[in-house]
Image 1 (cartoon, helix red, strand yellow):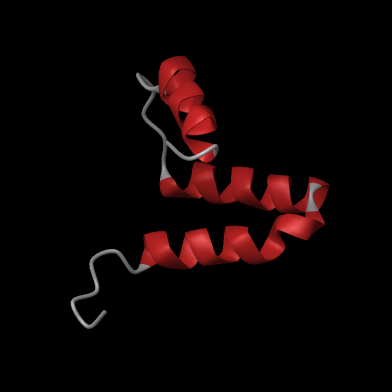
Image 2 (cartoon, helix red, strand yellow):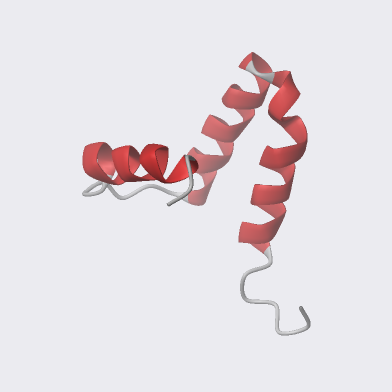
Length: 58
């Protein structure tokens, strides 16, 4: 188990029954980076990965 799994499990436990839009998620990611600019690169990588999940080329 990775250290990040704890945070992911907490997210599922606390908010797992909610439906969210991609727009809502994008705003939360922007807010997070505004508050934590040192995480700009990992957040950008996560957002790009999520955006390209259905790309067959990769």
